Image (cartoon, rainbow, N blue to C red):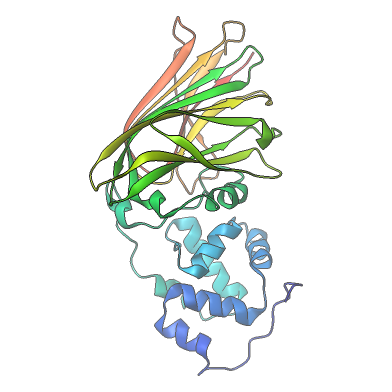
Length: 318
């Protein structure tokens, strides 16, 4: 029903939706309830937004497909609101979720891929772009070590990012990694140019049509065995961009060690630098401790035992 108008629920106590609400699984019950309502996912998302609950279309789609499930506080609030919006019995959907799945350093081994909602914006553009190149190998790797170096030019924009990383295979046949980059608001995806530097080659490249988002497949030279590690390096050049104020890395899965360095041109030095942190359900990144600019005009952070979320460095211009 393209208009997104909610249909009046009738008494169908023995209908398939009501059976699914009693027996599950969650994603089938959710999909059936949405179908019965006549709402599109876009209309449902809009009604959630009216209640102050932000959920991406990709997340709603994944929930009803069984590709992911709501577990975090904001997501559970969304499910409770969906029950009200669709006229369902209270807790009928929430009860089908059961206990949260285990989290922690190795919990991600069995997890389905996370979307970018709550990590980076624009989440929908990121999910749409990344989904087209993510294969099953995305679930087969975890970051053992990763180093990002971002170069900020005299024009105060990030001009180049180089990443060197070691990944570990959780399953046999892992053979690729996906580079994902989201530029400054107002930039163009056409100005983002990827390069395979060491132990990888470029595969599929997808750029979002209206947002500065790019997803790049980096193909290994062989398939990995379970437990095997692999070193690769890649870079991204940014031709044109608005002024940059931070660099941040989103971790959809737990990771071992992360190092971020930012190097500034001597003609454009910031007056202050500080650490950035964002948990998946936080609306904005939180500022952390100040980081002192070195004599070489660079700053860095180093973190170990990374949980899903966002880490980065922000800076202020005079």
